[in-house]
Length: 291
Ligand code: GUN
Image (tube, rainbow, N blue to C red; front, side, top):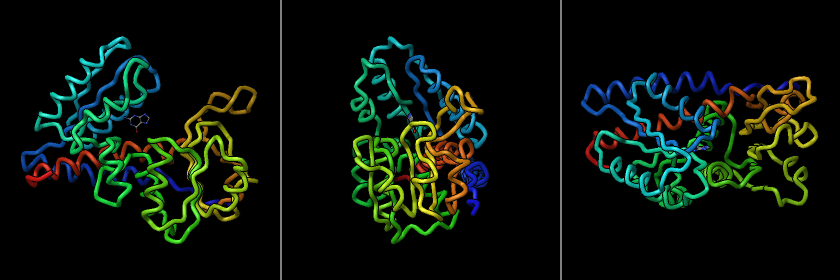
């Protein structure tokens, strides 16, 4: 069997053109969606992610504001900027790129963002709302995965889903969204005793370990849907050394899986797409006078 490829680039292009139309409609009503992005420090990967987010906003007709702070910035300065953006009616979304430099308390910074502008879905109140099945801004990467499953016609209700990784950004909210959608969910992590025993049972396997090629074909149930959230480089000595790869050994896995996301071009573009979606949704709420 060769797995069906779940193409995140194609789905992103479709959804982003719909979002651009919605942004244009809101702009015509006098409410152009606006996203403020805060980048602190000199993490090279973060700088690339932020650049991509800003470019995607521009392309969709969303106004973007970018604020850069040096590695030795004072937390108080960033918190003051967040307070200013919370009060600015032209700003509908505020995103602080993670990770922050070590002197920052990430929790304090994330909680400073107004719940109504928390388009990353990282504020404790949005996390609580998600866990209770209330309307909330969902974190962008797991939300993007749910869209891939939806548009890929992958049945979630009643499925056995296994999530590998328990981060606040991906693993935990992913497990909550899958649970909400009716899957029976197992969360595995670095302390899991027999990872393969769990992954081999999964109808839907979502991998967010951050370790290149950690999931081989022998860890996948034949016909399963495999969603690879990893973004790594092939290791030295590998024929494709230096090129991007996921946490799943794609070439081996695609012979066993029923459907699979590639890296790049799978989950990655969907993260930004869902950020745009949350920002447009926030602007729509503002345009309708309620939040
Ligand atoms: N760092 C890694 N992923 C993300 C994300 O989705 N949002 C933010 N703000 N920072 C991140």
